[in-house]
Length: 274
Ligand SMILES: [Zn+2]
Image 1: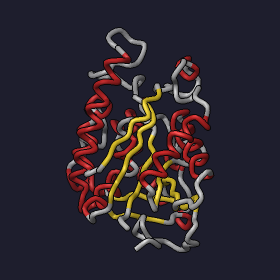
Image 2: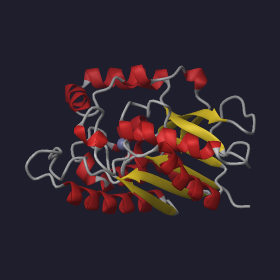
Image 3: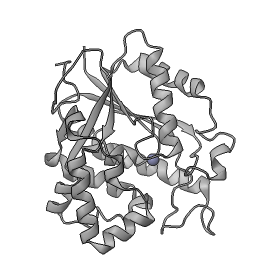
């Protein structure tokens, strides 16, 4: 039987930062990679960094543009199939858009889980990747992606191994030091997601899979650049190749559902299956 890894992400562009290198490496090994993107990203920035609600931000146009950017990113990462669930972006926590009709956050978890379950039964992945219960950093669509994935997996007779993307403390501390040393990076980090990586990190010994993706970091960079509307002023993309590889060349995961009883640390998301 062929090997399949399926990633559940919230918005177009989320596939790159935490899983882009892993997906590219798997594709290069002949593994089928499937991406489920839950929302249309309509409340991301419009081109030129225009924020939602500001003049010139048309959510429908942003969603259409981000759909095209996602296709280009998926091509760069060698993703075999992209499935869009098509829910409306819910915006950041507390925004009115959270409760908008059609928003992912206002969708019943079991409705989204049913759709995801049908995909999981059809693709039969050995491994699924998504976010932890706080959506890694608290965005409502990321939390909902977590909840829908857990509910869909719970309904399967034979669950796949589930991983959450994660950040080890050692790497988070390095990132924070670099950001403090570079005022530009610190400023854009603050105005962007506004989170402290160290607060989101887990002890290094909790990391189950650490992937060295430095060999495919060019593809990861191309995939990030494909999301031009969101990454135009990304501090990552302004790094030279060596610094980019150092910052973006590793991806980490913790085990959340472990039907194979795996222990220890691996360099392979498909550990236990090959
Ligand atoms: Zn997102």
